[in-house]
Amino acid sequence: MSHPHPELKAPPTLPRNGLRVVALGGLGEVGRNMAVLEHRGKLLIIDCGVLFPEEHQPGVDVILPDFSFLQGRWQDVVGVVLTHGHEDHIGGVPYLLRERGDIPVVGSRLTLAFISAKLKEHRIKPRTTQVAEGDRLNLGPFDCEFVAVNHSIPDGLAVMVRTSAGSVLHTGDFKMDQFPLDDRITDLRAFARLGEEGVDLFMVDSTNAEVPGFTTAEKDLGPAIDTVFRTAPGRIVVSSFASHVHRIQQVLDAAAAHKRKVAFVGRSMVRNMKIAQDLGYLKVPRGLVVDAKALDDLPPTKVTLVCTGSQGEPMAALSRMANRDHQIHVGEGDTVLLASSLIPGNENAVSRIINGLTRWGAKVVHQGNAKVHVSGHASAGELVYCYNIIQPRNVMPVHGEWRHLRANADLAIATGMHPDNVVVVDDGMVVDLVDGRVKVTGKVRAGYVYVSAGAVGDVTEDELRDRLTLSQQGTVTVVALVDADSGKLTEPPDFLARGLGTDEKMFDAAIPAIEKALADAASQGIGDPHELEQRIARAVSQWAFRKHRRNPLVVPVVIEA
Image (cartoon, rainbow, N blue to C red; front, top):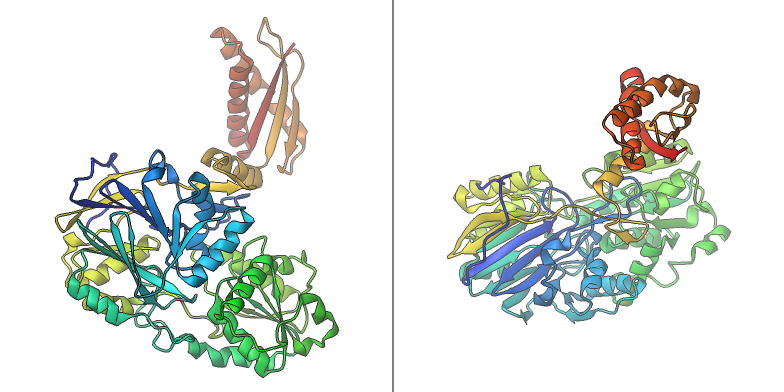
């Protein structure tokens, strides 16, 4: 099994008979999925998603893949294939199309409807090509065939990419529910047919690779959801992904059966459910869905609200309800149903929301205390089935944290794959398929790109560190009047502290440290105000840590007197 090599450099030129695969996101993390395939000088992108920020990334809206690998080569991109309509696979497309607006966007009917609506908000009109399972499409030197896969959103597709260097089968996100709500199963007959033809590289969803057995069928949630609707004494608030059409269908069916009206809350939820309904993916009984304002006139036992925020996202409707920052006040008698999975890394945020809602008197039903969610991803049993059916020549686990990727690689090896033919790699690692063998040949930049207040890439890691310091350690501004000739203080400095919970006078004890720093600078002939500011900042930081074990952000201001 190939492992990452930290000493890797930029990759060599790709041989003419080679196929290069570079994941710019989605490996070592759950989100911002993006793979770039290179062959005969052309590039094909599969998915372009976002990652949602964690607590240690304050003020960040979303995190994008790093497109720097594509800089200077935008004209070589023949298309972006979208496997399905979840944010972690399509959320980065608006930012991709800012770089080159006419890249063909390829996807299924629902996926294109979701991305087109999102792009409209960004004022971008994409060039789209709609495909369905069984279709074949040539994009430059890449011959793409699309295969139906079952996932927690309708219309998911796997893609088989045939090139003169070999073929790649990319599953997208998938599972093998044998009783899907939309009767559209993962097409194992097609997988078997492609296996017979020969799959040189199998790129497989790893999200659930650690989970033994088989993923529960969506329909098995029916009884638990029905129990909530049968027993809830007042309003029901359901929180889900804004794209989880299957789960929301189950909620609508339960609401109709128990004679409740439903209102969608939150812009993305309202938008996506209207699209799903218009295209026939969401079947809504007449008169069931009403405007949220109409609920005020109904008794609580007739009310269901469906909103976003099941991952604890701070700006989503459910978080704001938990913080009493929403026009809908959740409290005594209300039942809140968290109807989606917990994305790794969001546990604390979700726990905070459950506590917040419980504190106001609501009963919270979630996957920890009821069977109200199943995963959208194949468990180990299903993955092993795929390896045995397809019998690929090489395997590259994708989509998941390190433990998921490694678990998936172990499954492939357990079915008889040679460890040398299984590559476990990180974002930015370059995997070349030449003469039927895969090899890690280099590394390209694939860091996080932060979107903050709508601006892309303005926030650096240093800026994030400053934000974290501000939130955890506080800040102190030091205003120092310095004599331009002698380099000495002309009067004691002013200190303005925030978030330190201490008297600003405590910093008076730091004045000797500042005087020493200025004296050292003067003895070295340094009088540049900017350099003096750096030295003062360092002196105050070291003093604060030594004396008080605090690491505040120090903002020095030197005024020449």
